[in-house]
Length: 495
Image 1 (cartoon, rainbow, N blue to C red):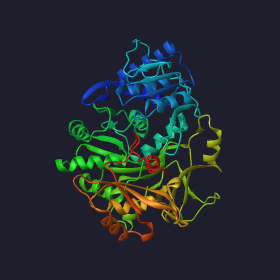
Image 2: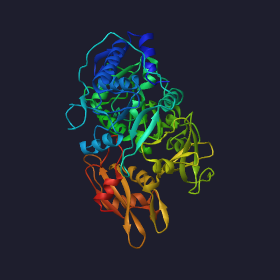
Image 3: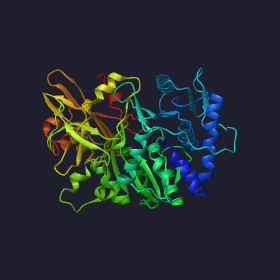
Image 4: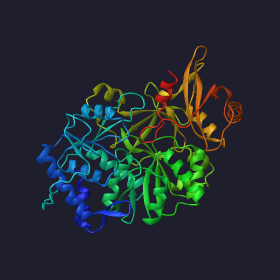
């Protein structure tokens, strides 16, 4: 099944329903969105010779036209290569060339000399034919997503039409039942998880809402919640934190927001507690990665907000239970399943798991071995099947032969009232192998001395885990998805 078939069906079933807004302005009904997609699909073939299997890269900020380009590509059997709009052009060009893209869609259409390029908002000739999308086999490539590159060169994750369909079914089953009256807000990049969630909204015949800013702006989201209502959106934990910080002085309590789906990085206990206190039970947590998009585990809103279970506090700090289409196991370095409570590598099986990495069989074999997707993340399952994420395996600090998990140290520091954000890394130390270093961002107008933080940490975790060095910084480096780039911190520390 071609994933674009859902748009074709919805546009015929409910042609007059509002489909795409930019800010408060209606840009498309479902009937006009279908026409725009068919026009762009014809243009891709007639002008650029794009056909089945060809790659089309999109390197642009969120825009109403983003939805048109995505579906136009799938309409003719082409493959989308969504590129994080916050990358440097040189980084984006590496992805474009590695993918062998026949066309690049950018904001201005004049970014990459020597490559076929069009502006995302470029007009195309209009036609009268509303042709259905080209049939696609389950394994046909649809979405070639390049990993964020936090640990090296990005790799192209190959996701098929069936991968995307199964991911969407998991969304509707586990995360949030889509409704026609909802507005799917694209505040996070559509090149990533936010864009993947559009399929459920299309199937339900609900509206898509691109902010006028074309990105994340907390004040704008609050205004849209009040004007449009029923907002549903994906947000990285850092975005949730910024939204809460903006809402609190305004006395805004989340009215007009139906669901915030958070993931893509660690949500610290103190942050989700504050968000729930202010906004109430509007939160769902997902855990996934590009290789199994958005669908490894889920913590539904009732479990995020629950305070009745004897272990509710621990459960809220987990990343939930396995997604409906996923099998999750904790494996030892030898590939053996580990019992509940023991830390190992989180591994996944299921129909959402990628086909492999683009033109990288060695990396594919390493990641997809023994019948499992090896995520590179460390964690454990409890007796009830709740999954707890410890850290990226590459981020574990080994000091004196003992493993120290940065997230545990970060959680302790974030309980301090003066600390806004923190990232913990290991740096070489001649006697112990590595020592713990904490990069700390303070709350506006707040500060603390190193001795005070050190005393605080000792009260919450074992002394050997505490940072041996603190670095106070105005902000932390992040990629376009809100993930903290510990590789940049290590490079800055010359690690």
